[in-house]
Length: 468
Image 1: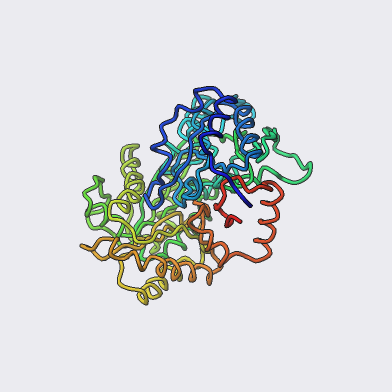
Image 2: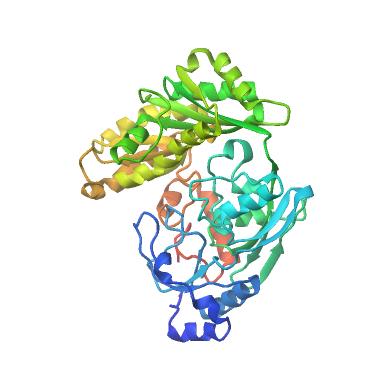
């Protein structure tokens, strides 16, 4: 399909259709992704209403001009950046209003550009919880989080972004508006278009609003860090915790010593809970209802776990709990400062996690000698498996091995029936991976859906599916 650049004449036409405020954004922050692996091009337009988005999309559809939706810009797979053509970059930043809160229904309605932390605060203001939580929550916006079906720390209890959404408002490629902002818990009237749009990464429509679920806030919460012998013990402890604590487990994170070694290496401040850094530990959080004690629940787990736990610390104050979570939150920053050669957002069936972790280094050894930081959301089988140069070496020395490293990791993930994209999406980084490992029938169905909903191919071309 032939696409056209957003040239000066087209932008002049848009200026006659939209208010001047839609063209005031500084383009600097829109042309590079966080890991600086891609630099893009484009004209930034920032509508302030669904009607303005509709007007913009209709004009782009008519002129065959590509549109790249841009939410918080925190994505790590290049879904928000294109180096091809000169697209319209549709910023959601001015779609930033909380539209309504229905505390008795546990529902709030928001524009797609509302920052996740502000959604969390809006829920907290009425005594509720919006449970989606991840490292970039201070800048990530709801439209992008839904478009990528983001995960984060609390998936084990509350599910991905998809599970937090009841309804959507979406502008289609031709500018028509689908008003699906339903607050209903049950609605079986035809195809579930909401779930189709969630996770589509802006390739099927532009999310402009969402009805979101709120949850009761736990009456009491507690955090603990437990030392385990190895990942197999961690998986066994997760099972034991499920038996003992049921759905009160909010998070269950696996941490390897390499992550803490990196924090030391780059001098990131944290309070170590143990005198000696353990090789493997788990960080867990529980939240319980009125009349129950979260700390007592963790103490019960500690006693019931037997030799699955070698050592442990149960936070005795909110400050101690915060210190433990600071460690987990600092690990990605430590990784960034060290500089990974290749980072992998993967998932495998939980019971196979120990075998995968044991086998992967041998696969990588066939490529070269590397440091590995494997950590992540054990409770849902999602590992961040990141490969780094030997100490004292720079990642730029190993750029020519990046593809071989990724292939070794992803081939092994595929052997275990896993996913090469657990929570970050496909973007442009993993288009070839999707074609390599994806089910052929699924890919045909995806292409048919893309062609039906975006017949001119203007929506985020090159993301998820190769442009054609």
